[in-house]
Image (tube, rainbow, N blue to C red; front, side, top):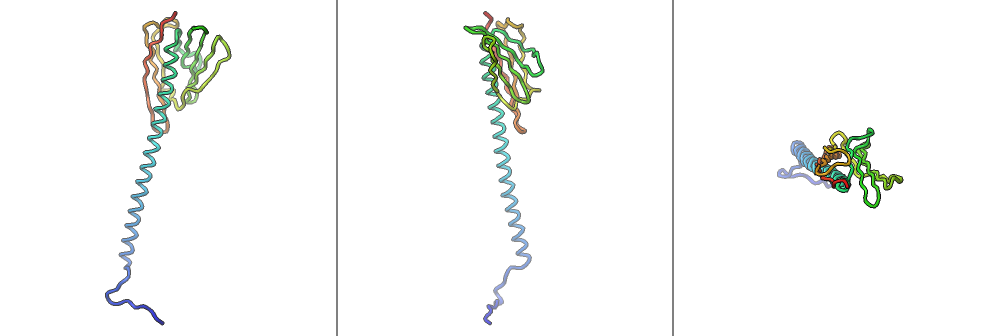
Length: 171
């Protein structure tokens, strides 16, 4: 048999060296894993925040455009989900009703008292922190400002915007 023998100056790994190697490998693995999950969590939070920002911007844009057209504003809901009612006359009579249902803001538009067309404006809307206040009487909004506050919450991230819009005066 030809076995290789260790000389006195040649040694293998001792148990202590092997344990130190295992501990160091574990620490490096833990550090890499922690960093990975922190980056992943930050990306998720950033994406959630951007989604919330997008939803409040979308809601603010569409509601503001309708308020600018409005000659009649009713911000006192007639039903549990009705949020805001707007109306105006151009060549046609428009009636728009906004509702908040299960975190979604819906817009229902009826032209000349026809069948309403309903579209979703935004989602993740927090109904407890979303409001629309106008200190004017219906049909008399000249010089008044409607304040539309909207909050969207996605995951643990939320965004709130306040829109101050002056409707056109009634004709």
